[in-house]
Image 1 (cartoon, rainbow, N blue to C red):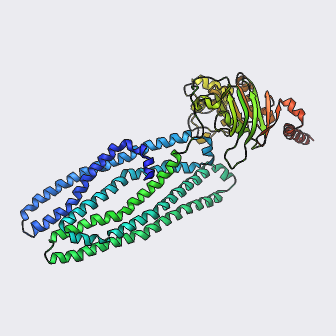
Image 2 (cartoon, rainbow, N blue to C red):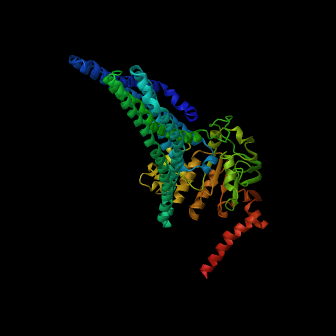
Image 3 (tube, helix red, strand yellow):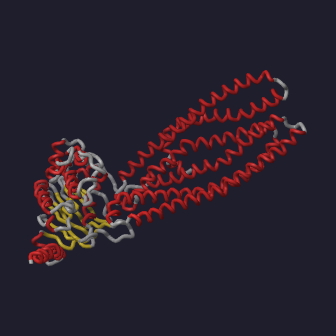
Length: 584
């Protein structure tokens, strides 16, 4: 029950619906147990004694009882469902909010399909138990207790003989629970992996088709699908093993009832109507215990789902969030790294090692180096996407830890190499960081990013709704909208992470000319693989294996005959050779 205890803050606020459901459940159960008693009275006191004039009154009373039971059942089921739906509404909100604030490090290892499975299938599995499982358990308990009490009232000896198999039935149910819970945990995990495989395949459908790997992806899906099937078959085998045993034990109780109860009727110790009532009551005990397996099934699924939900809810953000600066204050943009090192986890090597530099407002810093050299990692420390393993990152002379995340990131315009656009209008994509801006400000940002011209060529201009991930736009167009989005928040610090890699050379030149005006008064970091993108920078940092191996202006680095010179030679001398070869 530890799982349900941890999740109680999400369902306990709606306990009034649960209590209403329980109150009417008690009434429904009490009426249910009255059935056999009415049957006993009808046989022993009316039929056998010939008092047939009581039959119309018993019929009317029975109809009224059914009417009350119908109304009570409706309220019981409606309030139970209201309890479950209200609870998971609150829980789903909390899960989604948690996912929004978890750090990048969490998503480095998380699978999108698995997270989607947790927010859908696992939440729904937990809801089903809240809506029906709790009340079913209580209904079973009430049926058993009340039925046993009535049976003892009719005959103590017959009750003892009839219920002699119940301890064995209880043991079978207990063992079933112990076996089925891990099995359902396996089902949930395999379902999450199956979701991940589908999500990855659909997201990368262009790559799959371009390389004709449809059959390969089908094969990979079949492996995940087969794993899901095997987990379900394993669970079905557990059911097939225990349910016939539980039904057998229940039927043995009925045989004992008929054998011993029949002898009691023959010697006059028990009335025929009481035996008939006994037969109904014993099924009110046996079937709840047998069907307890189904409720345990729901409980096990809910518990397995709850454990997976708790894993998300208990995930701690490793990023501290102070509140010294409000989100409406503007930073100057001075950035300083003091002996900063970064290791993503204990088992990995350092992504950055002993980085020290200072960038003043209005200056442009270029970052260049081979893939994996630490360029992006360095800039992600400024926005606290990650925290350094050692050293300190300062902005305007204060540690980044002294700023709230909202205030810090509101002052940093970050354009990633892989531009992500939402399935909404272009205007809303550009104004995403500042929804309150006017259309004129959106257009101004788009013009600076060299995006206005192609936007106006679209059917609805800035009101054009984009497809998923910006489907319908070229890579360069998506990058320009992403740059416009960063400019729209009017940041103090502008980070361009290979932000013009998907545009042609002419567009890149035009963007750089526009950015020259935008960069004034801001601290700008340009990450690039092409020297042409950052040779105008005030200072260039050359990184290798997480270390700064060279720094200086373009002209100075060319003369050093070091790492920068080698990159320059690869990009420009080879181009000249190719050009000369083509001319010849």
